[in-house]
Amino acid sequence: MKQITQTGLTVENAISEALEKLQVPREEVTIQIIQQEKKGFFGFGAKKAEVEVTVIEKTAAPENSDTLEQTTEIFEIPGELLEKEEVPALSNEQAIEETKNYIQSIAKGMKIEDLSITHEQLGKKVSFYLESEKVAMLIGKRGQTLNSLQQLAQLVANKYSNQFMMIQLDAENYRERRQETLEQLADRMADKAIRTGGRVQFEPMPSSERKVIHQTLSRRLDIDTHSEGKDPNRYLVIEPHK
Image (cartoon, rainbow, N blue to C red):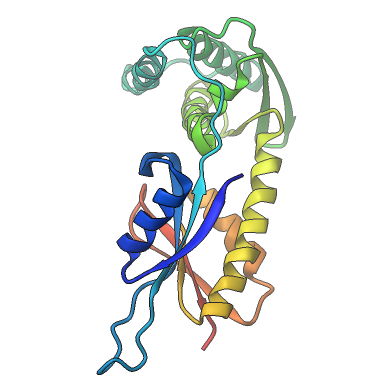
């Protein structure tokens, strides 16, 4: 993983310098703002901006350039279906099968023909496990495709089920690996907040991922965490405890 910490007179200056050193365009990196620039008073107390820029690890490329377009169109279909008249409630087993069929239809629309789906149920929670040679396409950039598919699968399952069901989708143990990554990132960014004495701002992320970071850092008494902004652009901030 290519990563660089860069300072500059402003945040944008720091980002530009980091991109130049990494030799990548802005859309191919994630940016963490470690510290905003401070002008100071008559030159005293001024601080440079500091950012951490990480090159995004690329997943397997789609077979053709239309795949992402097709995926977006498919993801819009369930919203229309769910507005139609109510369907008779089915047993949990039948609702699970309908959800599997729906996921398979999405995969086929993405030109994925070898998808295998298994599941396990614990109370109201049903976990689906996806396996395919092209599973990277189902995960997407930072899990965005998998998260979107999970939300839609949740709607489909509860459209047919006679009781509420909580749906989770996983592929190649992505959820566990992502949690480990977030926990490591949380501690690393908290340490930077203490080292620099300023706030550290994450990129926007789903509430489930913000929750992981909040919980990971809840044991630390030297920092405070809170979220700012509105979904889907809500992000988490770490600051030294005052």
